[in-house]
Image 1 (cartoon, rainbow, N blue to C red):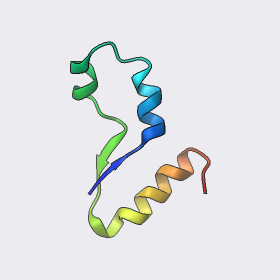
Image 2: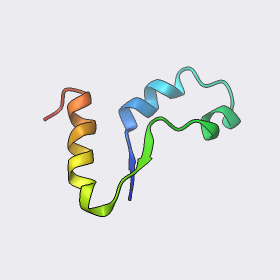
Image 3: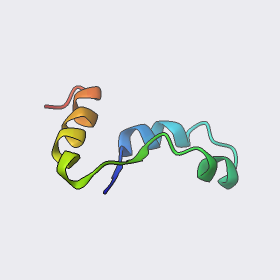
Image 4: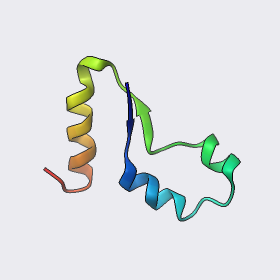
Length: 51
């Protein structure tokens, strides 16, 4: 399963100069096993102070 941290992605987009740079490094997107999906989403939300 893919998780996309849209808040982090928006912040990263402010500093990316080219499409190649954006596609090369995707800190706001990562894979998790299906069984860990809820846990991973909760971790992303906690990083941004969202409960």
